[in-house]
Length: 142
Image (cartoon, rainbow, N blue to C red; front, side):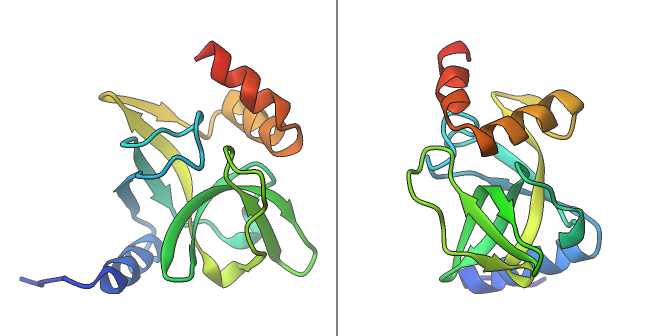
């Protein structure tokens, strides 16, 4: 039996599990992606090659030893990624492909699984990445 006490060890283990092709389940704790993601939602992450990521995808990445889940806003030709939380005003620092741990593929909220990789959700993700006003409208109807 392996005893993991260090947060860094947990993230390293999650990265290895994701890179093996498995799905990792993590409870979300912040409010930076509200209203789309809510505190205590369970996020299901899967590894995806950086070249397959698209604007609007919600990704998990490491920044300053923190595990962050935010939306991809822009992808440069040199494989640099600009992200931002839906509830945040400012963009995050640009990150490289190696910082991305996985893509959020579904969430569990109140015992119900919600897929985030349907055509409807993909459309919403692109819309939210491009036009922030739609995030506020979405909040009024959920």
